[in-house]
Image (cartoon, rainbow, N blue to C red; front, side):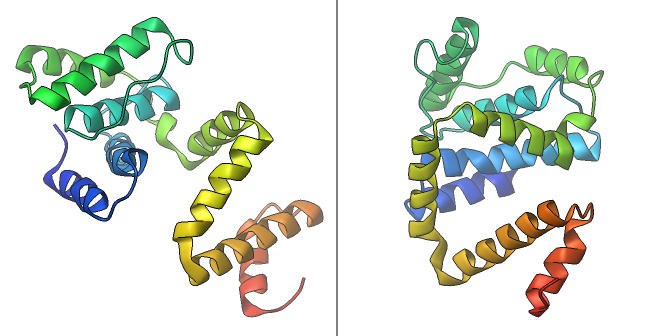
Length: 183
């Protein structure tokens, strides 16, 4: 069951005209927090994200299920069921919910670490074409605003410098860049 705060944030995002994926992002974020808090675990980062997306669909976010061929048929059917339940407002089975919860308690908590999420994001981006990534970046630019773009550019610059200098601690480079000192 998603927290009230998460559902409210998703509703606010919808009210602001943001996309279904942005609304669903709140549920994924909540799921990551639950894993980090130790409420339960997940077998993989992908599963943790899937749980969040399923919660979003069941809560009524208009996130359509993936098309045929994009994911396994089992996953697609599961997403379709969650989407329909969100449309109809069906109550969750207490027995099923408890069974899922107890199974997830035995899984790893490391799947929601920053490192695991970064690895997942990188592998997901690698599966997309350069054109698709570029279109996505342009879409982000439209909603980020001047200050957001500026901050993102500074962060990217610091990351590039850290990579070029072979600096393990990106934070020290980022601090120097923000201070206006060129390393």
